[in-house]
Length: 238
Image 1: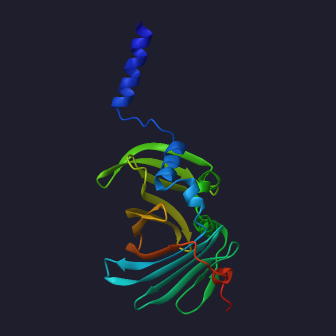
Image 2: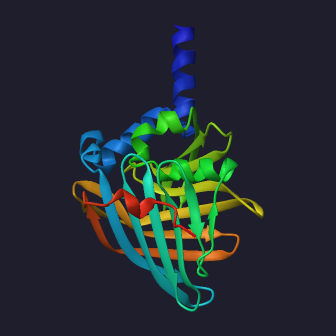
C-alpha cells in the first residue's frame, strides 16, 4: 500500500501547490471556445472598427479606424490631433506605412513578418501555424484576476506571452515584441470590457503600454462581414 499512498500524497502536494492541470494547447482551445467557438469565428470574414485613442500622460487624443479582411488584409488609419493622419496597411504581400506628410515606406525583414502575422484574419484559429511552440508557464495575477501564462514562440523566434483568465478563459493581457528602426519594442496590451458582438466575445477597451508611454483604445463602432474593396489595402502611389 505504500506506493499508492506515496503517489496520492504527491498528487495532493502538486494540487496544493497550485500546479496547472491543463496544457498550453488546452488553455488556448478553451479560450477559443469561450470567445464564441471556432464555427462562430469562421463566419466572420471582414470587419470595420472605429474608436478613440487617448494618451493619458499628455492629454492628446485622436480617432482610429481599422479595416480587416480575410485571409490577411489590414488597414489601420489613425488621426491624432495636432499630428495628422497616419496609415498602415498590408495587402497580403506588401506592408507599408504612410506618415502625416504623405511619405510612404515599405516594411521588410522581421518588421514585415511581424506585420504579416498581425494581419492574419482570425489568427487565433491558426495559432499552431503562427506559433510552432506553446508553453504553459504557470499562473500569475493580472489585476484582480488569476491568469494562465502561455508563452508562444513564432517561427522568427520571438516570444509572445498571453495571459488567460483561469475562470472565463478570455484573454486578459498580451506581451509582444516588435521590430522597429530603433530596435525591438515591447508592447503590453491589456484587454477589458468584453461584449458579445455577432456571437463573439470582443474586448472594446485595450490599454497599451509602450516605451513611449500609455495609449488607451476604446471601440465605439464595430461591424462584421462588411464589403471592403481590396484596393483599400494597396500601397499608396507616391
